[in-house]
Length: 500
Image (cartoon, rainbow, N blue to C red; front, side, top):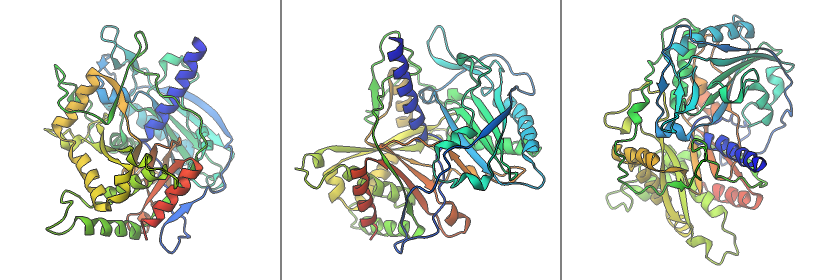
């Protein structure tokens, strides 16, 4: 029985790590300089270093610089669903004034000071004995801090922008000096390279931050490391997203899958998602600013004019790219010999919407918790094949428009009544404009910021094109796709055909 439980826990851990990508940290990908005439490139895997030899020199805990009251810290229903760790890595070139050792000292001191403002981060996750609800005990037991070195130079470890499993050595996922049930909510690892550059690897429990609040945390950490005031004043009041009493689920929520958790099972980590092994091809599709402009022009022709059939369509870069990807992904599973049965099946698209400005009143700018919910759009594969791009853009627009204050509150209340997760055929996760690489530290901006990437066929990632952005060449985007071989071939064909 214990063996079966361990297998199920490993499967759930794999799902959690994959699901994290749709909610928080995803990698930017640099553009291959050799572009095809059409402007779109499908990047094949570059040569990757298979192992990065890393030596750990010091492992310690960092505690708040000032006392913090020991009290329970409330987590919203959105936070509770995201009880798993996410790892990100931020690469920095050598700096004449800041050696890796000096950076480590600055970061350690800044961490101690920032923990006073983020009182939950030095605590520990606990289940309330009475309510069985997940919360954080603000016991000031500290965050982890690791100092390490590598035998490689920064330029020796290959293409920073292509997801590489070897980067796992640059992040500490758990502290061996602590018990399994007493792990910190955050761990920072500074790894120096022989060239003088270094990597800052961060492992953080997703219940603590979403993408926007994590970037604010990095901005504040960078400010304190430079002995400056906080860039953004944190708002730690998660009760701003508490369920109503009594809960009022006022909308149907087809974008969520209700789970039946067996009695006695730890409801904070439901063990339901299987992860059957499957061989997946992995490709990066690059959309240049011209490609995106072409898609927008197509959609605008469908949606423009007084007699438009799709007046609700907002022809934005995100909406047209997401609509384009949705069509390609849904039709990639339809074979040429299909008898029509697969064309009648529905495809549900999921994508994240920031609810901060949509609530009444809006959340404070510095809200530190998870404030992202899942929007959806549903159509049959036949409809996705036949409808013009403008109609698909309208559906994506309507999905986000559905996310009003009342709808968001209904979704939060749904989580009070039910245990479940977002559910659909494909989730398009956009990290296009989060800007982790824009954070200005005393030693400069990162050369590149990325997470450890886990590949899933039902999650497609949108990440910024760093080269066109840095050269002011427009706002390009890279699309990271993992599919079985035959589906990938169909996806690639559809992806390029729609751009001609």
